[in-house]
Image (cartoon, rainbow, N blue to C red):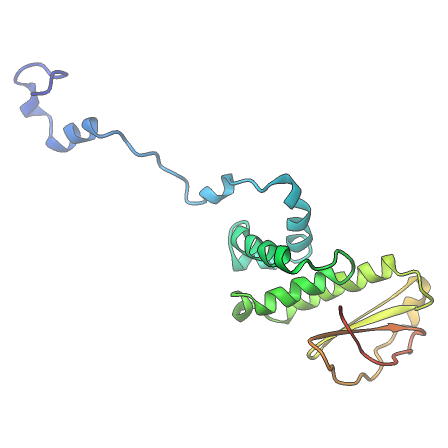
Length: 181
């Protein structure tokens, strides 16, 4: 007998509604509950260097790319990629060896290669006027300052490694591919 209802009234209340009162309601979590999981603030710079440069990666692991990011950070922890201009190329290496490789085309690779070339340009203090990066059939050129106007894509030899690079000593100064460390 339910003590919350007057005598005889229980037959007027459906059994389903009595059951709902007896069992506590489960909270309705939003379908995007992962939105409420915050990254450790120390990891945010890494998250931004991946997804700000290539937001298309968010489509591989919607909505925030947390699984992709966690997988990458686990790989980065074990492999300790240098935090220099090659870092973006190491993101590419991880992507191409990850569970997401079947969903990767040239676009994100080329995007990260362009970011790596820009980092090289911003940090290089040698006499080189530019850099060329290569991966399979993709080539990315970047030149320093005013040298950019004369920077053209020279005929390049096939790549001997997964990713390769060459400093350009003149706008058309390709010499030989070097391995990316």
